[in-house]
Structure formats: C-alpha cells, structure tokens
Image 1 (cartoon, rainbow, N blue to C red):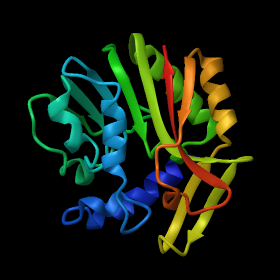
Image 2 (image 1 turned 30 degrees about the vertical axis):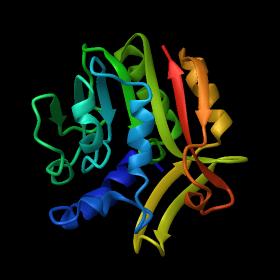
Image 3 (image 1 turned 45 degrees about the vertical axis):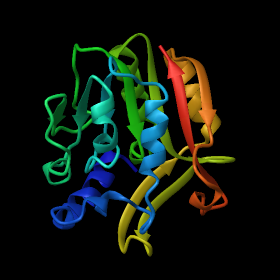
Length: 212
C-alpha cells in the first residue's frame, strides 16, 4: 500500500464533489469537524499562521479561517478545494503533499484525517518536512485513526465505501516514536471524539500534538 492507491480512490470521488462537500467523509452521516476546528483553535489566535495538509473540501478550514492570521491549504484535487471559502488569508495549492515543499515557516502544521493514506516510509518523509516547515516552538497537530495494539492495514474492496479502499492505521505508539525520532518534542495525545466515533475495536481516533 502506498499513497498512489489512495489517490486513485479519491480521484474517483471527485465525480461527486461538485454538489457534495461532505463527500470526503469516510463515515457517512457523521460530522466531527466542529470538534477538529475547536481543537486547532485551542492552539491558535489572530497571529497564527497555519499550513494545512490535505484540506479536502474545507470542512475544517471554513470554520477557523476568520480566527487566525492565515492558512495555506495543500489539497491535490481542485474538485475538493473548490469548496474552500475564498478569503484573502487563505491560499490553496493543488499539489500532492509528497511533492509539496516551501521555504515558508508556520506556527502550526495541521494534518487531519490524512496520514493513514501514506505508508510508513512516506509518512516519515512528510513528518521530516513538517519539522522544517515549523517556526521555532511551532506545533504539529495530527488527528487520525490509529491502531490500538498494532498496525491495521485496509487494502482492497470496502463494503462501506463500495470501492477499493486503502488505509494504514499505524499503531499509535509507533507513530509517536516516529515523531520523536524525527525530532519532535513534548508529544501529547488527546482522545477528542465521543465514544460513538470509534466504531472499530482495533482502531481509535486520537489527536497528536508535538513541538519543534
């Protein structure tokens, strides 16, 4: 499994993106993005500059853009990013996260519901770049589904999604250790969702916050 598999999945999804900004949500009929937005705002103020990786249709960005200084959004698909609010303090870059790079630095790099679509080697390279993109004392904020006891790989046809689906829900402790090895400090995990959000016995949603 690698990111190419996931990109093919999302490419098919763009066909319904025009009329449905919620199409990027994997768990149908649920929306926890207000919780996501509130969590990011706990670390933000009007002076905060954010780099958001995998912005999708802006379900989080559209809730926080007016409460921070700026947000640079990285989203491969124009069909998704078309739903992001047009604002002077938002920039949208339609590029694959693996290919993106910048000399600019940020107070926060946010990665919500994305990192499962990259394998471990790809993820390590992304985290290395995130460390470079952060200002001194900047924070990486990750929210994702992680394995509780070990890695959980989903690779193949999904009854729920009705198509081939690819995700690597890595063991939460492995992810934390990877971040430490790369150089992130003071790493904390948070259980930010209500119990009903965690529908599977072997995975759990966590937010991870680490400092440069």
